[in-house]
Image (cartoon, rainbow, N blue to C red; front, side, top):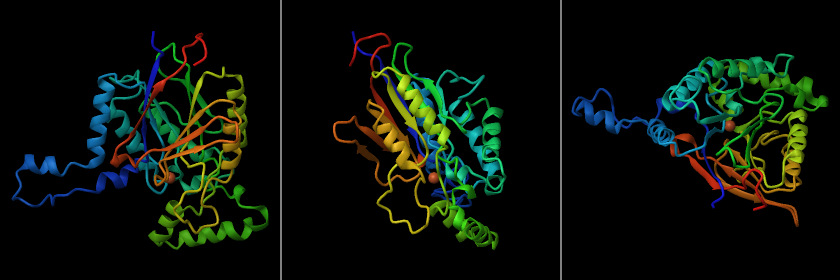
Length: 323
Ligand SMILES: [Fe+2]
């Protein structure tokens, strides 16, 4: 009598507009190649990866797909819509499609945030078009102010995926300290408005930004974890790394503003937890714990065009004894 096994695919930052343009290794105008050969060797890496994932969905080898955010580049909403459609069609996920029963969890990334919408008084405005794009193709919503919790795996498996929004603070001046807000906020806007693409890239890629979880989502996580039986395996998914990475980043806000609060909550949850993320991929596995406490294992997905992680393991049975 084995324990139920759960198998999830962790897929990293898609950046579909740029990923779809890059890495063609053949000049399409070069007539010395046959069309067939050209098609084979000019295949974009992202398509190869997606074909592999599609085959795994078709063969029902996986219980769920987790997308770590950054579907688009530089907050371009048309890129996000195209990305959502690509995921739904290429993998046949979402309502009415062939692999509709495969769970597909998505979280937002900093590149998915339109800066103009982030300036609106409502903290939720910047997420509206992202969820509309997902709805339009029948995919599940991203978490906004609260976490989304879904059971994954076989029906007798004690495994829950908690999708969290680490971009609640992205582009929001509320997270710039009040003493500097009136000067720093407009200075960032003026630098970007000057139109130098390098400045825009520096903003998104090196994070003159304020990624943060909402207080509500942290409270919700603590409350939810507190109610779950200890044997329930929690898989928390968010875009940003919990720890600063080895890459030196010279910017006032380089990492999650309040990652410490989430890190402490997860380490004090009284259970081992997997924290899956994308964003920076240089330190792929980090294990955190307080003395005598359970491990919080953080795993970074590779960039999507480089492949994906398979997260697999046995979990306790619902109603069964402890592992
Ligand atoms: Fe990112």
